[in-house]
Length: 118
Image 1 (cartoon, rainbow, N blue to C red):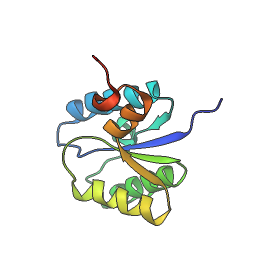
Image 2: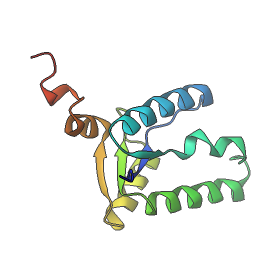
Image 3: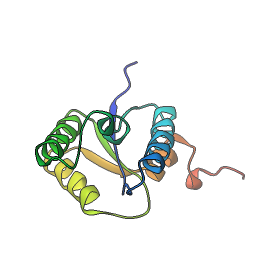
């Protein structure tokens, strides 16, 4: 069975190390729920220089293309930054389902509302 692509978005901070740690954790949880996670924050900073305006635009364009190819948008974290809101709006425009990480885990039987511990 082929795993559907799941685009991961979150309110990324200014610390690259923390972003990569959080992104890797989110991706692992989405992977364990049966999806192929896509998370540009894990690889784009290695070859793009966001302080260069054209590269910052290219980063956004590449991320949008990856979202277009995904079956679902997974929103992680506890805040909605403008970038997260933009991802949600694009997913809505493209008619791509959007959910939270907690929603994915609940459906998969691993979330808080799954009845674990009963």
